[in-house]
Image (cartoon, rainbow, N blue to C red; front, side):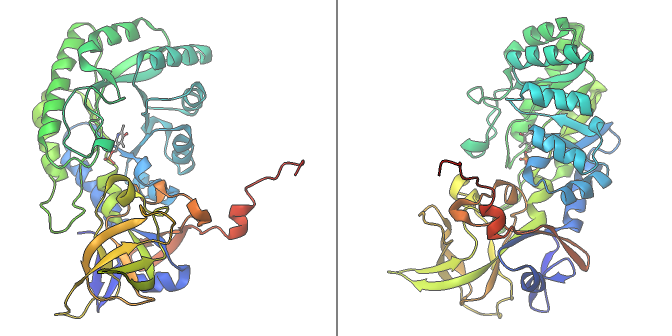
Length: 421
Ligand SMILES: *Cc1c(COP(=O)(O)O)cnc(C)c1O
């Protein structure tokens, strides 16, 4: 249930006809549903009811401040992976003690910024990072709360570019070396060990990899406590997948995930943090685009849209599938036909779908890419000097532009010409 439904033959975002937004904002654009964001956050929150927990939304999935504010208002914390994200979360009103800082390459400047501004914890990913953080914290006369991200060496059975929990990935420290690393951390005066962190990847569609990882974390908790460390917090990462293709079987639900967390870690008396991104934002957003031309090729028809790979890169980058539906509901009984759905960018990679069965479409028609809320707008670029497309947030019958489309001048004037030219 994602609140993008046909009503009276027109696709709506909550109570707002998508075509009304298109008429006012122009295409292409992203539109998010407040009700869907809220529902998904609550599903996670409720899945851990009765356990001391904090849902830290992984804001890299969709980081517009209006989205952050919506979620923070429901009690969400944030998982940030850069100084920019930290600043954005704070600007959206998220208190520092609800922000966890992840990522393999935190710089000293980023560490200082978070320590001065307030931070719940750093999820440290290597020994050099640990030493740098210790130095920065001592310089400021504070102690940095940390977990160490352990790499449990499990196969998350997801796309290679988004698997993070195998020993060959760059993330975390091998779990086999955890005791040694925690012993080192305990000797550093600028650090305060508060727990363990693990995150095994993204778009994970079964629970088994989580079970394997969390059982290892449970064992490690007991071992580290026996070594004298105060392990009181477990950050379990994010990664639960969403059904991109409606015809496919559905990934596990947050409630089932919550049950697994209780089963594997519930008796340790730890505070639990989880970091879902995609499952909160993914189905809460669609990308709306207009057909520029229908071009007949040899043995195939191309649907040339005004959206391109620079607006939504997931198909080009991860071979990702997005359902693409017409904004005007097709008449019943209309025979679908195959289209290659492409954008205007000068690369063959600018292809959203090949041979996709769709109702017949014509120049000027609107289409919507479903499940485009996560890793959509945030990964957009201005390749081909195409402006970043607007983001719109819907709340019941209201909608607001939450990021405006820049003008050509806005884009061009960011360049500066050296005076010798
Ligand atoms: C990307 C990321 C997440 C979120 O992953 P999703 O698949 O969007 O849920 C959580 N934690 C960390 C450390 C990440 O890098």
